Structures are given as structure tokens and as C-alpha cells.
Image 1: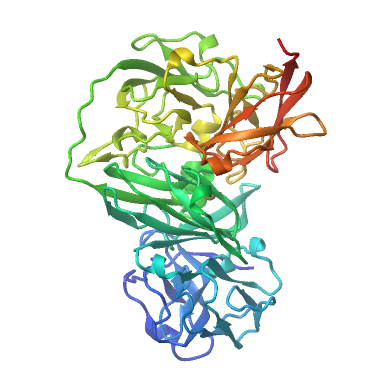
Image 2: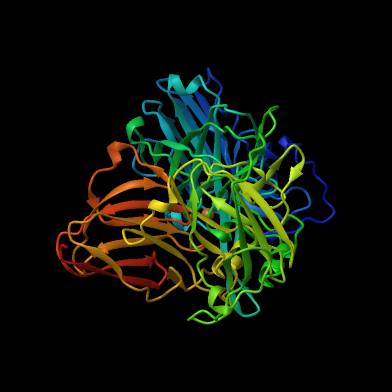
Length: 626
Ligand SMILES: [Cu+2]
């Protein structure tokens, strides 16, 4: 049996010191310490036409020298230390092809994919070497990866999870602008803990686990270009705080497609399946500290770490305010500016009480709730303490001060998801803020007032950004609707549907909640529509564990609707074309659709967690024309 987790004892190695000596000598090397690869430097020199890469046993410390030391396989440029992810293979479009020789120095037969134009992988028996030609005729991003012989990409488990590297073929235009390449990797297996099978996982971005990931630095209004590659066997809905981004390329393991500018929506979350890639661009106009992270709660907490101390905290659902409430698939960046934040007068004050849910969930168990109160702190009746939180109807351009009254016996924090606001109120404890003034969690039975001005009308969300797997499954989520004129908001024709968690599950670590709700219900009341009248559906996907699939229509036939907005921003006109009424979304995404029913009758909006076993059917009743 393999022992993937090895704790190094009495061995002190500087993370910056690469042990080149270990890679020379015998064909089967001793374990070398893998360095984190920040993907700034191509492993292929400009004039080179050949490169040799070894597959080696390695130890890896994604959480720095004090964190666990993991035994994995890794790629290494011959004569150098291995890196995680593997060496960046970056070339100019049309540059001379490169002969890549792979040498297998581990004891298993390894298939390597993604380096050769041939359909078949390079099969490397122990000690064997193979050569492929990396061509540069097509621009884009893709992964090269290794696996035990015969294993597909998404069955890779522990050792081979880190046999992953990026191939970038850049266009002349792309070459002129600085960009960053981020590669997500994961080692994965099942562990038996106290008789329960739980998932053991180590996630990383460029070889590091938050808070050890690199902090990027930008000036306000820099043009930011990232290439994001998902080398894990699981999907990641990647969410950017504070700013919209545009996706200019989307790729898979075998292809990459540029997206025309007219078809690039503004988004705050993009769902990236295993093996897929994207190029994204944005201009961070607002100074301060920000994060770009996966919106699956378990990918940003201790479930994604092999640090046993931290995992034990997660098992016990115990949280501290020491900043380790968040870990894993998170990149942080800082936007600097010498301009002070302008003081803007507050036009409206709101009081949001955070308390226990008034009644247990239908499926069992207690929860948490948001509720609006007229003023000040108060104990609200059970009937007001519901899930999801109330729709916060805000006016575009109007500064609002929201006082969070935390009545829970534990800290919390609230993120205003999708709103382009200042850093401090953004809600990430110990991170949000600027110039040394950092946001902290709202302590138990304490309060905090944040203020911001929503600059754009649309559909947004608010949710806990602290201990999210527990607090978001427990009910701390809701919708924000920003409109130009709140007096003209018509709930009769403007329907808000929030898909979220339905209770904190008692499941083994790494196992998703079995419950999902629409507007807090497993049996929501009907949406009333009328033939010939246009209704707007505002769908918000905020279940911390599940991608959702929604379909509007009859049992056998989906309607046609018109997508009008994504993540709160109006879609480009080229994308506002009638489409089959289906929506697939990871957590952290919203979408607005317009629909004009043509035939009276009983229909439904069916919402299910993809692969989850739960589904909620929202009845849709269409009355005849007035
Ligand atoms: Cu994720």
C-alpha cells in the first residue's frame, strides 16, 4: 500500500534551494523536493529546439516548510529540480517546433498526453524515454499531463495528480502584454477516518495552497491578463471579487477557441470543467486587496488541504478568526493607488440581523438566517428568520450603509457578490481592505457597519464569506437586486429565484450536502405568468456544493427564453438571442432571462443539482391573455 502522506522529520530544506544534484546519477532518482512553479518563465529557451523532461518521485510542500510534505510524481527539466505544476512550455505562434523527450524515472508505467499531435499518448515503461514534437501552429492554452498507463484524465488520483503542466502558444499581440499563467492541480484519494470514507485532497494553484499562493500586484487600471488552466479532476467555478472580467479564450484538453469580442459577456464567475482552460482579462479600477477563488466551498477550506491539524478543525466544524477560515484554491492580488477613497454621503441605512433560522430545515437540522430589521439590534420572531435572506432591493448609485448584527455564537462575514464596490466592505475577513485597514469577521454577538454604492443595475447575491461550507449550507445567502428606480420594480413580472443550500449536512469530510432549495423551499409556490406578457426570471446559483441545471417548460419540452444578463451585467446584443430555456451554472453565477408565454397551462421550472440527487420543481402557471 502506498503512503502518500509522508512527514519529513529532521530534514530542513529551504524552499528556494533546488536540489539539482538529486536529478543526476542513476535512472531512478531519489526523491527530490519539488519547487512551486509560478509559470513566469518558459522552460524552452527562445532558440532551443529540444528539451528533456524527467518524470520523478518528489516531495512537495504546498503549504510551505511548516506544512505537510507529500509524496507525488512530478515533471522536472533534466538536470533541474522537479516543479509543480510541471515546466511551462511556452512558445510563439509559428516558432520552430521543439522535440520534447520524456524520461520515466518512476517505477510505474506512465502515459503522457498533450505534447504530441498524435492521438495516442506517449507510453513510458519504467526507465523508458520517448520523444514527441511540440508544434506551434495553433495559438492557445492547454495542459500536458501524465497518468498511470491507461488512466483517463479525470481518474487521476494521488501521485499522478501533480503530473500536470501548461502549454501556451501565444500570438504576437499576446506577446506584447504581460500575462500570468495559473495551473490548478489536485492530488486526490479516499481515506478511512473513524470508519467513514472521506475524501483526502490537496489542491493548489501554481503549486501552492492559500494562504501560501503568490500575491499578485497591480496598479489601478492596469490591464490584467491571466491564463487559467484546470488540471484537477473536478470543476471549479472561478469567481473574481470586485471586478468583472471578460473571457477571450476557452479551451479543453484537445482544443482552444478564441471568442470574438462581441460575444464576450462581462462575468464575475466562470465555470471551468476538468482539463479546461480560459484566458481572462480585466482592469482593476478599485485599489485594495482582492481575491480570485473557486466558489465550491470545499475547495476553499481545509477539505482541500492535507494539513491534519487544519482538517481536524474542519471535521469538528470549529472555526477561529485567525485567518485560516479560507484555504486552497484562492489567488490574492493587491491593487495600489495613491488616490484616497472619496467620502460619499450615505443616502440609506439598513439593518441586517444574522441569527439562527427560526424553524428547522424540512430535511432536518438547524440553520442560519439573514433578516431585515427596521433599526438597531433586535431579536426577531422565528417567522422572520428565514432562508434565503430577504431580497435586498437597492437603488443604483445610491450609497447604502448596512449594519450587520451578528446574533450567532460564532463569527461571520458578508460578501456582496458581484457588486463593483470598495475593497473594505467586500467581506473577505483579514483580506478585504486597503492601506492597512483590513476587514475582520463580525465577532459573535457584535455588529459591523459597511457602506457601498452599487454602480450597476442587475441581479447579484450576498452570502457569508466565513466558514462557507457550514454557513452557506446553513442558509446565509440571498439575492440583491439593484435597479434604477425601486418604485418601478414589479414582483408580479420580475421573479427572483435563489438556488442554495438546505442545511448543514453531517457527512464525511469532502462529501457534498444532499439537499438543495429554491427560495428556501423544496416545494416553492407557483410563479404566475400571463400569455403575451413579458416576465423576467432572475436566477441566482449559490449552493456551496453543487452546479445546478435549470429547465423551464413542460415535462417534455423546454420553452424558449431570451438571455438578457449574466452575473448582473447586461449581455452583449449578440448573445441576447432566443435560446432553449435551460441554464447550467456553478455557485456564484446569476442570469436574467426574459420570457413571454404563448399558451396557457401548467408548466414548471425544474432545478436540480448536477449529479446530486436533489431536484426542486417550481410550478409555473400561465393564465390566458387579459
Ligand atoms: Cu473548485
